[in-house]
Structure formats: structure tokens, C-alpha cells
Image (tube, rainbow, N blue to C red; front, top):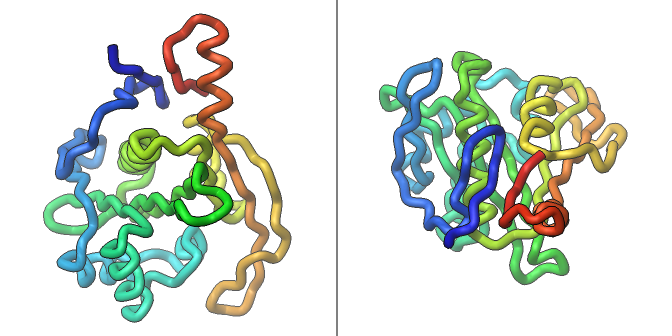
Length: 210
């Protein structure tokens, strides 16, 4: 029997091979979730340029710059990262990325990076995208996930806490925005392996719950 997990009230088959594109219903309408490729470079650049400057701090690099997008695509092509796009009416409205390095000292750890257009926030797009990215991590056999954001991004923090993430570190003055102002970063972690072990100890089969 396939192992399943509960993520924000949604059952996920942990052994399922994720296939894309897939369509998801949200309060913002039907959203297509698909893998990002070189063909999406221009659309993602437009998305990045339309984000508030502060939102760009969700990501380690400024995706509103063409050279950053080109480097991003190269990372995707060599398999270092996997990026999912949320698309509606041909327009990118969100992006979720799973980063992992199997050759590092932390091959069991993945980092999730996610940003969503202000136009669709609070309408389930961020939740759907984060669930899909989380499911990719489960399918990759990762044991721990991390995500980071500035401390004032309360809605994003609440979203990831609802998925079982917990605050693990506060990095003072860790990022500097385009205006030169520094911001604190909070690092959230989700120890998948530990949660699975705890649930199995209580007789629940492979559940991933918060």
C-alpha cells in the first residue's frame, strides 16, 4: 500500500510520481501548475518585474534581472533545482522552487523558495503551490526542508507554519534590499523524517502532519 501524508488537510501520496502540468481550482480561478523551462524565461522575468521590491527578498537573487533569470534556467537544465510555475491565462502568478545539492554535506535537506503575485494572494494559489513543491520534496526522498523570509512577511510565515514548519533561526541584517536597507531573516524548518518516525510510533502509516 502506498504511504500517504496529510499536508494542510490534503492527502498526498508520498510514492506518487508527480506529473505536470496539472490544473488546480482556487479562489483565483483555475490555475495550471507546470514545470519551468527555458521557454518560460520571458514570462517569469515579467512576473519578477511586477513584484513589489520587498517580495523579491523571498529569493536569494533578484529575479527581475535578465542575467539572474538566465542563470536560473541553467540551474534548472543541469538539475540543481526544480521550479514550478502557477499560470493563469498565460500569465505567471507564482513560482515555487525546490533546491537541493546531493553532493553537499546535506544531501537529505532541501530548500523551498516561493513567491506569489499580490493579485492572487489569499486565494489559495500560494497554498496550492507550496503543497506541490512539498510533494516534490517528498517524492525526492528528502528528510528535512527549510524556507527563509523576512520577519515581517507574516502571511507567508503563517502559511508555512500551517504546513508544519517551525522557526529555527533568526539571522540579523542578513539581506540588503535595492535601497540599501538591511532586513532580518527567519529560517523555518520541517523535519519530515522525525515527524514520520513520531507518527509511526503511534501506529499511523507514514503520515506527514503538522
